[in-house]
Structures are given as C-alpha cells and as structure tokens.
Image (cartoon, rainbow, N blue to C red; front, top):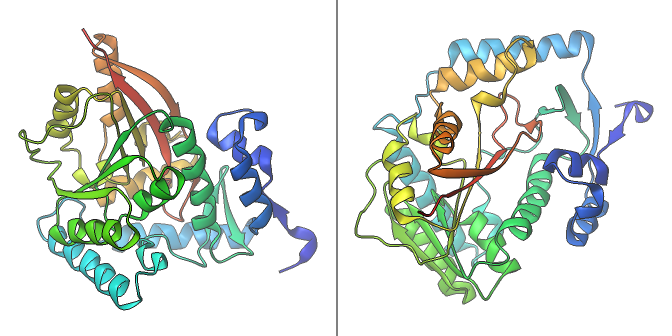
Amino acid sequence: MAVETMLKLEEQDFARAFGIDVEELPEECKVLIAEKDFGYEVLEGPERDKVILDVLKRIDSDRQVVGADERQAVWDKGWTDNLKDFIESGYSLDKLIPRFIRPNQIIRFNGNYIRLSNPNFELDFYSIYRLWLFKEYFQEFDAVYEFGCGTGFNLVALAQLYPEKRLHGLDFVRSSVELVNKIGEAYEWNITGHLFDMLSPDESLRIEPESAVFTIGAVEQLAGRFEPFLQWLLDQSPALCVHVEPTIELYDETRLFDYLAAKFHRKRGYTQGYLTRLRELESRNEVQILQVKRPFFGSLFMEGYALTVWKPCHV
C-alpha cells in the first residue's frame, strides 16, 4: 500500500460522525483517537468496481433470513461458545467481542469503500463511538438496560465507565443471560441478566423508574416485528431510549453506494420502518425524538451504526 495515498481519521472526523462540534468530544475519546491507527485508503476505479461486484454477488447468493425460527438456535450456540471461551480463558474480556465485527475487512465511510491499515479499525471506531454515546446519554441514570445484549460486550464497557450503576442485560437466549451473569460475578460488577423476548415481551418485568434503555444491533433482528417491543417500552415509559441500528430510512437510494446497502438490508430481512413509526408517534405527541444521526460508517455491506434517541411523552 503506497504511503502517500494514506489518509487518517482525525478528531474532527469523529465529531462529524457523531453530529457534534469537535470541542464537545470527550477527552477520553481524544486519547483513544490518538492511540489507535485510523489510517485508510479510499478505493477508486477498478478496485472500487470489484468491491461493488463482490457486494452484488453476495446479495444474490445470500440465503440468511433474519428472524427465522432457526436463528434462535444459531444465536444460542454462538453465545454458548462465547460463554465457554470466556470461562476457559480465565474470564478474558476479549472473548466477548461479537463475531460479526470482523477484522481485516473493507468498510464503508463517508460514501466510500475504504481499505484499512489497522485490522481492528471497525472495532476501534465503534469503541470510541460507544464511549461517546455512553458519556453523552447515560451519565445521569442510576439504572440502564440493554435489550438484545448478546455477549454482554456493551455492558462491560458501561460497567468500566460507570461501576456504580445498576446494569441489566436482556436477551431471548439463555446462554446470553448466563454469560452476562458470569461477567458480573467474575468482575464484581452490578450486572444482572434477564431472559426476555422482544417479540413477546414479559409484561411482568418492570424496569426501574427514570431509567434508560438501549439496543445495539437488536431491533434489526426483529425482522420488522417491533410493535410488541415498542408498545412495551411505551408502557414502561423509560426516561430515555437509545438505539444504534441499521436504519434504512436514512439511505439515499438514488446513489449506488446507498442503494447497495438498502438492497442488502432488504435481502436479509432486517427491520424496516422503526424510525418511521417513531415519527408517526411523535406527530401524535406520544414520543419525542431527540436525535437521529447517520454516522456514514459501516461494514462492507451496510451501515449498522445509525443513532436514534427518543423518549416517551409523559401525560
């Protein structure tokens, strides 16, 4: 890779992605940006054409269907493997990194496909994004709930930042709940796992008053069947709801780059219409949308990091 073609993400690039001024970027984020390697090269000409062709071929050949019944067994096995690896490694937090964050991948950034000098570029970017997100939105809450918590990867970051908070991880497979509880036990963090199906919410479960809830790549897995979970949230009336999810409404499908991402989104069957539904509820004064932001960053096939922040309107 020619050195002279390399670019590098700077503080202003992260601030722009988060929708803030660079002066608002937390010092902890600035330290990580300086420490990590965010060098990249924009793919052009034949190299970009090859990536587009590979994406189209993958869309044509892809057979995975989000929300299919057999996916529960897949998730259960995946989190069971993480639990086994976590215990056998002596409780190494590295064993909690979700497998869908793959190293050494071409990724999407600001309307371009980019090649990276750091194999963990996406993970490092996401870690800084998540740090900003947690500091921006969860600092004032005593209790925070993550729905679709998987390996507990995000709860660990939250516990490291705010060890005093009461954290809850909810997932629809038991191995995830066991893993989250094992993390809390091993590190003496106040993290509790709960079995919870977002497609059929447990009405007996009550979240603490004035708490915050969040999802990261979980609403996407509902395959559009989000209404039971949304209604449950409205009934619970948390103080804040934060979602980091692929959001098809934010693509500009008149552009090839965005059209491909939307096409992959639809082919897989990821959730569509959640933001549209929130906007409908806002028009009826049932919720208030506080922020919607597309960071223009994602993996090869789509952007999974769009931010939507809202809260129920208390009447």
